[in-house]
Structures are given as C-alpha cells and as structure tokens.
Image (cartoon, rainbow, N blue to C red; front, side):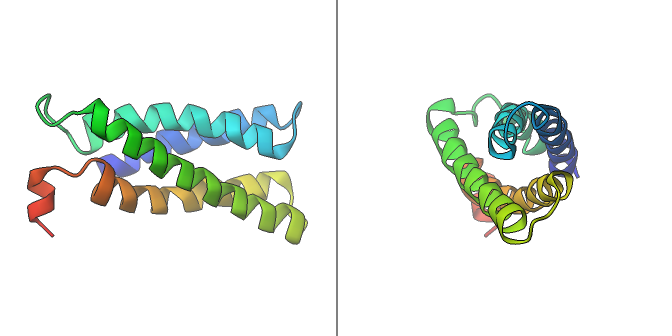
Length: 126
C-alpha cells in the first residue's frame, strides 16, 4: 500500500508535468520532464516510506545507481508505449501519456522490490 501511495504521487506528478509541458514542447520532451520529476519523488519516497529502510540499510552508493538504471528501463518502456500509441495507433496525447504512466509503475515495483531496495530481510523472503 505504501508503494502504491508513493507511486500514485509520482505518477500524478509525472502526468501533470508532462501534460502541462506538451502544450509547448513535443510529447517526448514533455514525457521526459514529467518522468524526471517522478524519479526524484520515487527514489526518496520508496527508499524512506515504501520500503522503510533504516539509516543502516540506506546506501545511496549502491541503491542510487540501481535506481537510475531501473528508472531508465522505465523511461524506455514509457517511450515504447508512446511510440506505439502516438505513432502506431494515432492516439491522443492524453491517452498515450496516461497509458505510459500507468504501465511503468508495474515494472517499477517489481524492479525496485527485487533489485534496487533489496535488503537482507527481503532477500531472505525469496
């Protein structure tokens, strides 16, 4: 539930920034602006709130690079969705952006849980 809350906040920020930016730049640039905003919210929100890592478990040196790689994977996925919907199907910007920002969190949860914010406690659970 905590992951969902942080994800909803990040997703809303992503969509609002992208939707506002698409009025003055192309949909891909707008998506990047929204995505960067969501990344900042997600990293600190998931680290501190979703996965409730203690100070001892926080390692920006190891977690941040993994988070950035996971986020880049999410960015690639979002651009793939946009390309399919915008260029392939001719969908409206609002629908393409909505699809991208709704599909990426599924990917993000899996990668963050299993790879980015993995601790000895949740590693033993698998």
